[in-house]
Length: 247
Image (cartoon, rainbow, N blue to C red; front, side, top):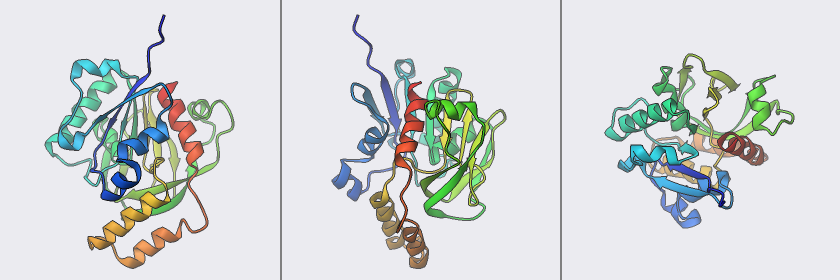
């Protein structure tokens, strides 16, 4: 009997920048190279353009990823409202969903938590986040081994989770942001930072935001400085996210 290919879908909630298109062929490739494995099928749905799978096809997928976005997860654009209803459906189906940045906040909204502007304002750069101790679920996601006390991750957000949904388990926090990571049941994992980003992607976003006059140069320099001598723990994030999606 032929083993069924594992199948995943990415809901892309941002547009590809010219840089990302040129360097990686688009954000879809960035996500698949971070979370995908050989022999899997990954499908792209540009949710920001109103692209969604047919409701009857949702069951064909083993898991879903919701990307970050320059839009607010508390907004009421048609595509955001539609994505909320898809997430609601995936929750009922107990499908695995990995929510990143905007995705993390959108899941909070769907599940009755509270989201809004970040209390400490825009956060950009490399941050160290503190991982919850003695969490069985996390131990499983790290392959049964030791759970690190902290992890470095690239951050790029101006909104945050202000109140966790009921029954959510807080998995990580930081001095900048109370809710850095949480889970709901065994099927939702939500991360405020960007496990898929690397230094060059962050720097290009920072430069773009400065050029759009949405950020002072001084703030941009500070964000870049965080990565002068340190790197995100990409391998550990990969392990955690892959184990969650595929276990």
